[in-house]
Length: 440
Image (cartoon, rainbow, N blue to C red; front, side, top):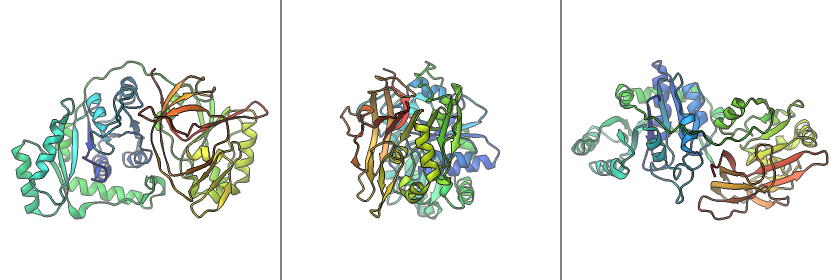
Protein backbone atom coordinates (compact mmCIF):
# COMPACT_ATOMS: atom_id res chain seq x y z
CA UNK A 1 0.00 0.00 0.00
CA UNK A 2 1.00 3.60 -0.56
CA UNK A 3 2.02 5.29 2.69
CA UNK A 4 -0.41 7.85 3.99
CA UNK A 5 -1.42 10.33 6.67
CA UNK A 6 -4.85 10.95 8.15
CA UNK A 7 -5.56 14.58 9.02
CA UNK A 8 -7.81 14.69 12.08
CA UNK A 9 -8.85 16.96 14.94
CA UNK A 10 -10.73 16.85 18.25
CA UNK A 11 -13.80 18.43 16.66
CA UNK A 12 -15.20 20.06 13.53
CA UNK A 13 -14.11 23.62 12.75
CA UNK A 14 -10.55 23.15 13.98
CA UNK A 15 -8.75 23.47 10.64
CA UNK A 16 -8.71 19.98 9.09
CA UNK A 17 -9.86 21.09 5.66
CA UNK A 18 -7.46 24.05 5.49
CA UNK A 19 -4.52 21.83 6.43
CA UNK A 20 -5.60 19.04 4.08
CA UNK A 21 -6.04 21.29 1.06
CA UNK A 22 -2.87 23.24 1.79
CA UNK A 23 -0.84 20.09 2.31
CA UNK A 24 -2.07 18.53 -0.93
CA UNK A 25 -1.42 21.76 -2.85
CA UNK A 26 2.04 22.24 -1.33
CA UNK A 27 3.12 18.68 -2.10
CA UNK A 28 1.71 18.82 -5.61
CA UNK A 29 3.66 22.04 -6.22
CA UNK A 30 6.79 20.06 -5.31
CA UNK A 31 5.93 17.35 -7.82
CA UNK A 32 4.58 14.82 -5.32
CA UNK A 33 1.61 12.82 -6.61
CA UNK A 34 -0.94 12.84 -3.79
CA UNK A 35 -3.99 10.58 -3.61
CA UNK A 36 -6.75 12.16 -1.50
CA UNK A 37 -9.49 10.47 0.54
CA UNK A 38 -12.29 11.67 2.79
CA UNK A 39 -13.33 9.77 5.89
CA UNK A 40 -17.07 9.55 6.35
CA UNK A 41 -20.00 10.42 4.09
CA UNK A 42 -19.29 14.13 3.43
CA UNK A 43 -20.28 15.09 -0.13
CA UNK A 44 -18.47 18.43 -0.49
CA UNK A 45 -14.87 18.17 0.75
CA UNK A 46 -13.86 15.54 -1.86
CA UNK A 47 -14.45 18.00 -4.72
CA UNK A 48 -12.02 20.45 -3.09
CA UNK A 49 -9.52 17.62 -2.60
CA UNK A 50 -9.81 16.71 -6.27
CA UNK A 51 -9.19 20.31 -7.33
CA UNK A 52 -6.08 20.46 -5.14
CA UNK A 53 -4.70 17.03 -6.09
CA UNK A 54 -5.71 16.81 -9.75
CA UNK A 55 -7.31 13.42 -9.16
CA UNK A 56 -10.55 12.14 -7.66
CA UNK A 57 -11.00 11.96 -3.90
CA UNK A 58 -12.91 8.92 -2.62
CA UNK A 59 -14.98 8.54 0.56
CA UNK A 60 -14.03 5.82 3.04
CA UNK A 61 -16.72 4.92 5.56
CA UNK A 62 -16.35 2.25 8.22
CA UNK A 63 -20.07 2.17 9.04
CA UNK A 64 -21.25 1.70 5.46
CA UNK A 65 -18.30 -0.15 3.91
CA UNK A 66 -16.72 -3.50 4.68
CA UNK A 67 -13.01 -3.74 5.40
CA UNK A 68 -12.65 -5.47 2.03
CA UNK A 69 -14.26 -2.56 0.19
CA UNK A 70 -12.04 -0.07 2.00
CA UNK A 71 -9.02 -2.20 1.09
CA UNK A 72 -10.06 -2.24 -2.58
CA UNK A 73 -10.62 1.52 -2.66
CA UNK A 74 -7.23 2.24 -1.09
CA UNK A 75 -5.22 -0.25 -3.15
CA UNK A 76 -1.98 1.20 -4.45
CA UNK A 77 -1.88 3.26 -7.60
CA UNK A 78 0.80 5.58 -9.01
CA UNK A 79 0.54 8.08 -6.15
CA UNK A 80 3.53 8.69 -3.92
CA UNK A 81 1.50 9.62 -0.85
CA UNK A 82 -2.03 9.35 0.51
CA UNK A 83 -3.62 12.27 2.37
CA UNK A 84 -6.97 11.46 4.00
CA UNK A 85 -9.13 14.05 5.74
CA UNK A 86 -11.08 12.97 8.77
CA UNK A 87 -14.58 14.06 9.76
CA UNK A 88 -15.81 15.60 13.02
CA UNK A 89 -13.56 14.54 15.91
CA UNK A 90 -11.10 11.69 15.36
CA UNK A 91 -13.05 9.18 17.47
CA UNK A 92 -16.57 10.44 16.76
CA UNK A 93 -19.08 8.03 15.25
CA UNK A 94 -22.43 6.41 15.91
CA UNK A 95 -23.38 4.22 18.86
CA UNK A 96 -24.05 1.00 16.95
CA UNK A 97 -21.25 -0.38 14.71
CA UNK A 98 -21.87 -1.03 11.04
CA UNK A 99 -19.77 -2.98 8.56
CA UNK A 100 -16.24 -2.17 9.80
CA UNK A 101 -16.76 0.27 12.64
CA UNK A 102 -18.83 3.17 13.93
CA UNK A 103 -18.03 5.58 11.09
CA UNK A 104 -15.17 7.22 13.00
CA UNK A 105 -12.07 8.50 11.25
CA UNK A 106 -10.08 6.49 13.79
CA UNK A 107 -11.53 3.30 12.29
CA UNK A 108 -10.00 4.20 8.93
CA UNK A 109 -6.64 5.01 10.55
CA UNK A 110 -6.66 1.62 12.29
CA UNK A 111 -7.66 -0.33 9.17
CA UNK A 112 -5.14 1.33 6.84
CA UNK A 113 -2.30 2.00 9.26
CA UNK A 114 -2.15 5.64 8.23
CA UNK A 115 -0.69 7.66 11.14
CA UNK A 116 -2.77 10.57 12.40
CA UNK A 117 -1.71 14.19 12.12
CA UNK A 118 -3.81 15.91 14.76
CA UNK A 119 -4.80 19.55 14.21
CA UNK A 120 -5.11 21.30 17.56
CA UNK A 121 -6.64 24.74 18.05
CA UNK A 122 -4.27 26.40 20.49
CA UNK A 123 -6.50 29.41 21.18
CA UNK A 124 -6.64 30.21 24.88
CA UNK A 125 -4.34 27.38 25.98
CA UNK A 126 -0.64 26.62 26.34
CA UNK A 127 0.80 23.53 28.08
CA UNK A 128 -2.73 22.15 28.36
CA UNK A 129 -2.55 21.44 24.62
CA UNK A 130 -0.16 18.61 25.47
CA UNK A 131 -2.71 17.01 27.77
CA UNK A 132 -5.24 16.96 24.96
CA UNK A 133 -2.72 15.53 22.50
CA UNK A 134 -1.67 12.85 24.98
CA UNK A 135 -5.27 11.79 25.50
CA UNK A 136 -5.75 11.40 21.76
CA UNK A 137 -2.48 9.47 21.44
CA UNK A 138 -3.54 6.94 24.11
CA UNK A 139 -7.28 6.62 23.52
CA UNK A 140 -7.04 3.74 21.02
CA UNK A 141 -4.03 1.43 20.92
CA UNK A 142 -4.62 0.60 17.25
CA UNK A 143 -4.39 4.27 16.15
CA UNK A 144 -0.94 5.85 15.92
CA UNK A 145 -0.40 9.59 16.37
CA UNK A 146 2.38 10.85 14.10
CA UNK A 147 2.35 14.35 15.57
CA UNK A 148 0.38 17.55 15.79
CA UNK A 149 -0.12 20.72 13.81
CA UNK A 150 -0.87 23.70 16.05
CA UNK A 151 -3.48 26.13 14.73
CA UNK A 152 -4.22 29.70 15.88
CA UNK A 153 -0.90 30.22 17.63
CA UNK A 154 -0.75 33.83 18.87
CA UNK A 155 2.99 34.50 19.23
CA UNK A 156 6.47 33.02 19.52
CA UNK A 157 6.09 32.93 23.31
CA UNK A 158 2.76 31.11 22.97
CA UNK A 159 4.39 28.56 20.65
CA UNK A 160 7.30 28.00 23.03
CA UNK A 161 4.98 27.25 25.94
CA UNK A 162 2.99 24.76 23.88
CA UNK A 163 6.14 23.07 22.59
CA UNK A 164 7.46 22.70 26.13
CA UNK A 165 4.37 20.76 27.13
CA UNK A 166 4.45 18.56 24.03
CA UNK A 167 8.14 17.77 24.47
CA UNK A 168 7.40 16.57 28.02
CA UNK A 169 5.04 13.91 26.64
CA UNK A 170 7.16 13.12 23.55
CA UNK A 171 4.66 14.30 20.95
CA UNK A 172 6.15 15.81 17.80
CA UNK A 173 5.15 19.18 16.38
CA UNK A 174 4.82 18.90 12.59
CA UNK A 175 3.61 22.43 11.95
CA UNK A 176 2.57 25.72 13.52
CA UNK A 177 -0.10 27.92 11.92
CA UNK A 178 -0.23 31.51 13.17
CA UNK A 179 -3.59 32.95 14.09
CA UNK A 180 -3.65 35.06 10.92
CA UNK A 181 -2.75 32.19 8.58
CA UNK A 182 -6.19 30.61 8.18
CA UNK A 183 -7.93 30.48 4.83
CA UNK A 184 -11.70 30.76 4.95
CA UNK A 185 -13.74 29.13 2.23
CA UNK A 186 -17.34 30.27 1.65
CA UNK A 187 -19.99 28.27 3.50
CA UNK A 188 -23.60 27.23 2.98
CA UNK A 189 -26.18 25.38 5.03
CA UNK A 190 -24.83 21.96 4.03
CA UNK A 191 -21.21 22.92 4.65
CA UNK A 192 -18.81 24.49 2.20
CA UNK A 193 -20.00 25.89 -1.10
CA UNK A 194 -19.19 23.40 -3.85
CA UNK A 195 -15.73 23.56 -5.36
CA UNK A 196 -17.07 24.37 -8.82
CA UNK A 197 -18.94 27.38 -7.41
CA UNK A 198 -15.98 28.80 -5.47
CA UNK A 199 -14.60 31.83 -7.27
CA UNK A 200 -10.83 31.98 -7.62
CA UNK A 201 -10.47 28.45 -6.24
CA UNK A 202 -7.07 28.01 -7.88
CA UNK A 203 -5.79 31.11 -6.12
CA UNK A 204 -7.21 29.96 -2.77
CA UNK A 205 -5.52 26.58 -3.12
CA UNK A 206 -2.23 28.19 -4.11
CA UNK A 207 -2.42 30.45 -1.06
CA UNK A 208 -3.21 27.49 1.21
CA UNK A 209 -0.28 25.56 -0.28
CA UNK A 210 2.11 28.46 0.31
CA UNK A 211 0.97 28.84 3.94
CA UNK A 212 1.37 25.13 4.70
CA UNK A 213 4.73 24.92 2.93
CA UNK A 214 5.96 27.82 5.06
CA UNK A 215 4.49 26.65 8.38
CA UNK A 216 4.73 22.84 8.28
CA UNK A 217 7.60 20.37 7.93
CA UNK A 218 6.64 18.71 4.64
CA UNK A 219 9.70 16.47 4.56
CA UNK A 220 8.99 15.13 8.01
CA UNK A 221 5.34 14.54 7.18
CA UNK A 222 6.31 12.48 4.15
CA UNK A 223 8.81 10.55 6.26
CA UNK A 224 6.28 9.52 8.92
CA UNK A 225 3.62 8.41 6.43
CA UNK A 226 2.99 4.66 6.40
CA UNK A 227 0.39 1.94 5.82
CA UNK A 228 -0.32 -1.70 6.71
CA UNK A 229 -1.55 -4.66 4.63
CA UNK A 230 -5.34 -4.88 4.63
CA UNK A 231 -8.03 -7.52 4.46
CA UNK A 232 -8.66 -8.17 0.76
CA UNK A 233 -11.94 -10.08 1.22
CA UNK A 234 -14.16 -9.16 -1.75
CA UNK A 235 -16.90 -6.71 -0.87
CA UNK A 236 -20.55 -7.11 -1.91
CA UNK A 237 -21.25 -5.11 -5.05
CA UNK A 238 -24.37 -3.54 -6.48
CA UNK A 239 -25.11 -3.96 -10.15
CA UNK A 240 -25.13 -0.71 -12.16
CA UNK A 241 -28.68 0.48 -12.88
CA UNK A 242 -28.10 -0.03 -16.61
CA UNK A 243 -25.53 -0.66 -19.27
CA UNK A 244 -25.76 2.95 -20.45
CA UNK A 245 -26.68 5.41 -17.69
CA UNK A 246 -27.84 8.98 -18.25
CA UNK A 247 -26.45 10.92 -15.27
CA UNK A 248 -27.67 14.42 -14.40
CA UNK A 249 -24.59 16.51 -13.74
CA UNK A 250 -24.41 20.26 -13.09
CA UNK A 251 -24.54 22.71 -10.17
CA UNK A 252 -28.00 21.41 -9.16
CA UNK A 253 -27.01 17.72 -9.38
CA UNK A 254 -23.52 17.24 -8.03
CA UNK A 255 -23.56 14.84 -5.07
CA UNK A 256 -22.80 11.30 -6.15
CA UNK A 257 -20.12 9.19 -4.52
CA UNK A 258 -17.10 8.74 -6.85
CA UNK A 259 -16.62 5.11 -5.85
CA UNK A 260 -20.16 4.32 -7.01
CA UNK A 261 -19.48 5.66 -10.50
CA UNK A 262 -16.16 3.81 -10.59
CA UNK A 263 -17.90 0.55 -9.66
CA UNK A 264 -20.46 1.05 -12.43
CA UNK A 265 -17.73 1.65 -14.97
CA UNK A 266 -15.76 -1.36 -13.70
CA UNK A 267 -18.90 -3.47 -14.26
CA UNK A 268 -18.97 -2.33 -17.89
CA UNK A 269 -21.49 0.52 -17.72
CA UNK A 270 -21.17 3.70 -19.79
CA UNK A 271 -22.12 6.95 -18.06
CA UNK A 272 -23.53 9.76 -20.20
CA UNK A 273 -23.78 13.11 -18.34
CA UNK A 274 -26.44 15.69 -19.14
CA UNK A 275 -27.37 19.06 -17.64
CA UNK A 276 -30.94 19.77 -16.56
CA UNK A 277 -29.96 23.39 -15.84
CA UNK A 278 -28.97 23.70 -19.51
CA UNK A 279 -32.40 22.24 -20.35
CA UNK A 280 -30.94 18.99 -21.64
CA UNK A 281 -32.92 15.75 -21.66
CA UNK A 282 -31.41 12.40 -20.72
CA UNK A 283 -29.71 10.52 -23.55
CA UNK A 284 -32.51 8.69 -25.41
CA UNK A 285 -30.08 5.84 -26.06
CA UNK A 286 -29.55 5.18 -22.36
CA UNK A 287 -31.36 2.38 -20.57
CA UNK A 288 -31.43 4.02 -17.10
CA UNK A 289 -31.39 7.57 -15.71
CA UNK A 290 -29.91 8.70 -12.37
CA UNK A 291 -30.52 12.09 -10.76
CA UNK A 292 -27.99 12.69 -7.95
CA UNK A 293 -28.35 15.05 -5.03
CA UNK A 294 -27.31 18.67 -4.96
CA UNK A 295 -29.04 22.01 -4.49
CA UNK A 296 -32.27 21.98 -6.53
CA UNK A 297 -33.77 24.54 -4.13
CA UNK A 298 -31.22 27.12 -5.33
CA UNK A 299 -32.14 26.48 -8.96
CA UNK A 300 -35.86 25.76 -8.68
CA UNK A 301 -37.00 28.49 -11.14
CA UNK A 302 -34.63 27.27 -13.86
CA UNK A 303 -35.56 23.64 -13.32
CA UNK A 304 -39.27 24.48 -13.44
CA UNK A 305 -38.72 26.37 -16.70
CA UNK A 306 -36.58 23.61 -18.29
CA UNK A 307 -39.28 22.24 -20.55
CA UNK A 308 -36.97 20.09 -22.68
CA UNK A 309 -35.50 18.46 -19.58
CA UNK A 310 -38.84 17.79 -17.93
CA UNK A 311 -40.55 16.50 -21.08
CA UNK A 312 -37.54 14.38 -22.00
CA UNK A 313 -37.35 12.91 -18.51
CA UNK A 314 -41.05 12.03 -18.54
CA UNK A 315 -40.73 10.38 -21.95
CA UNK A 316 -37.67 8.46 -20.76
CA UNK A 317 -39.49 7.24 -17.64
CA UNK A 318 -42.36 5.79 -19.66
CA UNK A 319 -40.29 2.76 -20.61
CA UNK A 320 -37.08 2.81 -18.53
CA UNK A 321 -36.01 3.13 -14.90
CA UNK A 322 -35.31 6.53 -13.36
CA UNK A 323 -33.87 6.97 -9.89
CA UNK A 324 -33.27 10.11 -7.82
CA UNK A 325 -31.27 10.66 -4.64
CA UNK A 326 -32.12 13.47 -2.20
CA UNK A 327 -32.15 16.57 -4.43
CA UNK A 328 -32.75 14.33 -7.44
CA UNK A 329 -35.64 12.70 -5.59
CA UNK A 330 -37.14 16.14 -4.93
CA UNK A 331 -36.91 17.03 -8.62
CA UNK A 332 -38.74 13.80 -9.52
CA UNK A 333 -41.59 14.96 -7.27
CA UNK A 334 -44.63 17.10 -7.98
CA UNK A 335 -43.36 20.36 -6.55
CA UNK A 336 -40.70 22.13 -4.49
CA UNK A 337 -41.33 25.15 -2.25
CA UNK A 338 -38.30 27.44 -2.10
CA UNK A 339 -37.12 29.37 0.96
CA UNK A 340 -39.18 32.42 -0.05
CA UNK A 341 -42.39 30.34 -0.06
CA UNK A 342 -42.79 30.19 -3.84
CA UNK A 343 -43.79 26.77 -5.19
CA UNK A 344 -42.19 25.46 -8.38
CA UNK A 345 -43.47 22.46 -10.36
CA UNK A 346 -40.95 19.66 -10.77
CA UNK A 347 -41.00 16.61 -13.05
CA UNK A 348 -44.20 15.15 -11.57
CA UNK A 349 -43.03 11.56 -11.89
CA UNK A 350 -43.63 11.07 -8.17
CA UNK A 351 -46.09 12.72 -5.80
CA UNK A 352 -43.40 14.01 -3.43
CA UNK A 353 -43.81 17.61 -2.26
CA UNK A 354 -40.96 19.27 -0.35
CA UNK A 355 -40.45 22.69 1.19
CA UNK A 356 -37.49 24.82 2.23
CA UNK A 357 -39.72 27.59 3.56
CA UNK A 358 -39.55 25.92 6.97
CA UNK A 359 -36.24 24.15 7.28
CA UNK A 360 -35.78 20.94 9.20
CA UNK A 361 -32.47 19.11 9.32
CA UNK A 362 -32.41 15.43 8.37
CA UNK A 363 -28.98 13.96 9.07
CA UNK A 364 -27.52 10.53 9.59
CA UNK A 365 -26.72 7.08 8.30
CA UNK A 366 -29.52 5.01 6.80
CA UNK A 367 -30.00 1.25 6.46
CA UNK A 368 -32.69 0.45 3.91
CA UNK A 369 -34.29 -2.87 3.08
CA UNK A 370 -35.81 -2.69 -0.40
CA UNK A 371 -39.52 -3.49 -0.57
CA UNK A 372 -39.61 -3.59 -4.36
CA UNK A 373 -37.23 -4.33 -7.23
CA UNK A 374 -34.95 -1.54 -8.43
CA UNK A 375 -32.60 -1.36 -11.42
CA UNK A 376 -29.64 -1.92 -9.09
CA UNK A 377 -30.93 -4.52 -6.61
CA UNK A 378 -33.83 -6.95 -6.02
CA UNK A 379 -36.35 -6.66 -3.15
CA UNK A 380 -34.96 -7.67 0.21
CA UNK A 381 -31.54 -6.19 -0.54
CA UNK A 382 -30.16 -4.12 2.31
CA UNK A 383 -28.45 -0.86 1.39
CA UNK A 384 -26.31 1.49 3.45
CA UNK A 385 -26.37 5.21 2.79
CA UNK A 386 -26.40 8.68 4.31
CA UNK A 387 -29.03 11.44 4.44
CA UNK A 388 -28.36 15.16 4.88
CA UNK A 389 -30.83 17.85 3.85
CA UNK A 390 -33.04 20.61 5.24
CA UNK A 391 -36.23 19.96 3.29
CA UNK A 392 -39.56 19.54 5.03
CA UNK A 393 -41.68 16.77 3.54
CA UNK A 394 -45.17 18.03 2.76
CA UNK A 395 -46.37 14.88 0.99
CA UNK A 396 -44.90 11.47 0.16
CA UNK A 397 -47.93 9.64 -1.26
CA UNK A 398 -46.39 6.94 -3.42
CA UNK A 399 -45.63 3.36 -2.43
CA UNK A 400 -42.61 3.15 -0.12
CA UNK A 401 -39.44 1.96 -1.78
CA UNK A 402 -37.89 0.55 1.37
CA UNK A 403 -38.09 0.10 5.12
CA UNK A 404 -35.51 2.56 6.40
CA UNK A 405 -33.84 2.86 9.79
CA UNK A 406 -31.12 5.08 11.22
CA UNK A 407 -27.83 3.79 12.61
CA UNK A 408 -29.46 2.80 15.91
CA UNK A 409 -32.16 0.73 14.20
CA UNK A 410 -34.94 3.28 14.77
CA UNK A 411 -37.39 3.57 11.88
CA UNK A 412 -37.39 6.81 9.88
CA UNK A 413 -40.30 8.21 7.91
CA UNK A 414 -38.28 8.92 4.75
CA UNK A 415 -38.94 5.57 3.09
CA UNK A 416 -38.33 6.68 -0.47
CA UNK A 417 -40.94 6.25 -3.19
CA UNK A 418 -41.85 3.97 -6.08
CA UNK A 419 -44.20 4.54 -8.99
CA UNK A 420 -44.69 2.41 -12.09
CA UNK A 421 -45.41 4.14 -15.41
CA UNK A 422 -47.97 2.93 -17.98
CA UNK A 423 -45.27 1.98 -20.48
CA UNK A 424 -43.43 -0.30 -18.07
CA UNK A 425 -40.99 2.21 -16.60
CA UNK A 426 -40.13 2.40 -12.91
CA UNK A 427 -39.52 5.68 -11.06
CA UNK A 428 -37.81 5.44 -7.67
CA UNK A 429 -36.26 7.87 -5.24
CA UNK A 430 -34.68 8.08 -1.80
CA UNK A 431 -33.60 10.87 0.52
CA UNK A 432 -30.44 8.94 1.34
CA UNK A 433 -27.37 8.79 -0.89
CA UNK A 434 -26.42 5.21 -1.65
CA UNK A 435 -22.96 4.18 -0.40
CA UNK A 436 -22.85 0.39 -0.47
CA UNK A 437 -24.69 -2.89 -0.30
CA UNK A 438 -24.85 -4.29 3.22
CA UNK A 439 -22.83 -7.46 3.73
CA UNK A 440 -25.68 -9.31 5.43
